[in-house]
Image (tube, rainbow, N blue to C red; front, side):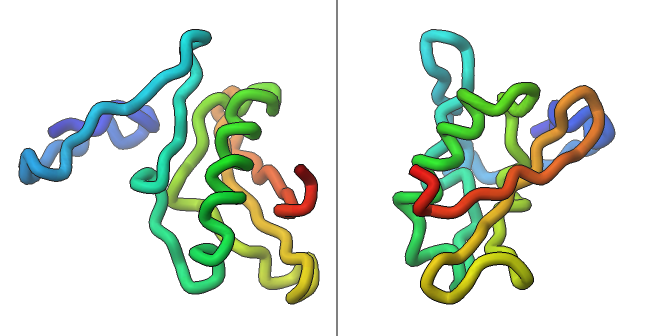
Length: 108
C-alpha cells in the first residue's frame, strides 16, 4: 500500500492486511462520501457520531476549497462551546494551506 494523499506522504509504503482495505465512495459530482470507518471516534466525539458524519459530508460538499478532509483531525474543541452545546472542528487543506472548519451539531 502506498499513501497517495497528502502529497508530503507519497513516499510512505507499507504492507497492510487485505481485510482493512475498502473502496472509498464518491458522489456523482466526484466528492467523497465520508463514512463511520473513516474516523477514529474518541470518548468526546462518539456520542455525536451520526451528527458529525452528516456535518463532515456537508462540509466536504459546501465549504469552498475543502472537498477533502483530514479525518484524523476531527475533534471537540477544548476552549469553544459549552458542555450542552459543544463545538467541533476538522482540518482541510485548501490550496496547500491547512485550515480548521469549526461547527456545532446544532448548526444544522
